[in-house]
Length: 398
Length: 56
Image (cartoon, rainbow over all chains, first blue to last red; front, side, top):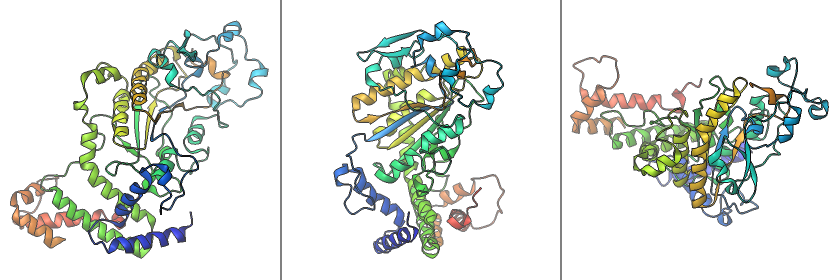
């Protein structure tokens, strides 16, 4: 980004919006303008704005990304390896490992035996996709999903691998996918962030890989494009309501004052972070009404709650509820919704833990996919969080 | 901004006393409630300025 040009652009906008003198921050107005420019169909996106239209008209309007953090064991879920039965207990041949590095967790093992798959697989749908018995609901929508088995990372540890998958680089510092979408396409709902993150802790490994906020960071893009993390539970954003004695009018007056003073500081220092702050305060003001409406699932019919498994599965750490919230956000125009479900790093007790993890996610993920297919134009990848192979990891925890 | 807020809290004494009950710190009795409420909001505004925030 050319900082001088960016500064000049912001200055010009401020002078323009300053004349409208309606008390809103310049950046808040600028984001309204962006919304009109970029939320419409892509063919019109080149009108006047700072960005060129994309080379290909996007068909997906929003993305719901279910990230299975910890690295689900692919050979127990989607990657059917029946031949491993013949090699059960044998040492992993060098012709398979080919000198691949192994992690500190595993390198202390005296041997690296092959292990036969312990769960039943069957083919599903017209595509004949192999899916494990652990994911019956996902199996039932086999023809609705694409299974990509070719993605791997150079990094062998979780964090650099996740960082790569989230940002395209295993070194921290690049913008995350959701930040790019927010930056490139803007928001289609001015009352909610364009990029929201929801995290749940599964029933499996409770001391799983940590998740850092840079995984949804904006890197070198303006910070207003970073993901906004909502809390899991009934209250996704705390302290949203005004305190006693502060009605919306008083709040508006206070924010106008803050906005004007912050705009003066932005003029004096030219720090784009101040413009982000102005925009975020305006967003927070609008979220005071948009978030309670979003989070109140009381208006969902009972059959929907049953479909997502929200009524009878309290051990999933909130994943099912987050799936329903994701659908509600998508309906309201949030561009990129990322769910992260922890607990998949089965170093010990895989048979119990992976069953629990699958029970956490199978039904709500399938319900979300089914409802979103009915709505059309959705993309909802599921991905795992580690660079594993059919090699040494086959032995873990059994 | 102060004068706007002061006028608003003079009009609505209930709102002023409501705001002053928020929080655990004791307050000095005998101060003008509308004034104290208005200054409370000014303090809140100042603490919300970009300059006032310390990044961790």
